[in-house]
Image (cartoon, rainbow, N blue to C red; front, side, top):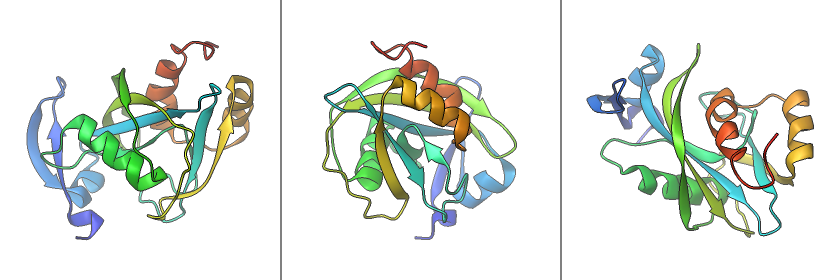
Length: 170
């Protein structure tokens, strides 16, 4: 199935499903939908960040703090997070929910559900959504956030939740 034809649930202010549309309709009308994000931490406490492929439909070639994406119609939130972790990084891991938040701008309107996973890999990028990844500590991340272009949803929602983790407070 083409990505634009995938079905996506649209949610209200309380994150309750109110409609189902195609991904193409959701993008074209900038409808509020659920997405998931998984912050991947290594055993040494560093965060795995990655660069998105140039072919992504939103924010191509930008850096991202978390593996993740749109929750598909009928999919459970944690199920979506595990699917995205497997698709983007080629791993499965135990997930711990950190929280959720809303992000909206000229490109998207999302309710982002955020998890953390511990994994040292190995990581593979077989689906073509990720072009490269690297491990960063808190100081390195601060510099990268100033110098590179990042996905604004993960910076707005996942970064504050990352700062709640030991050793990551600003």
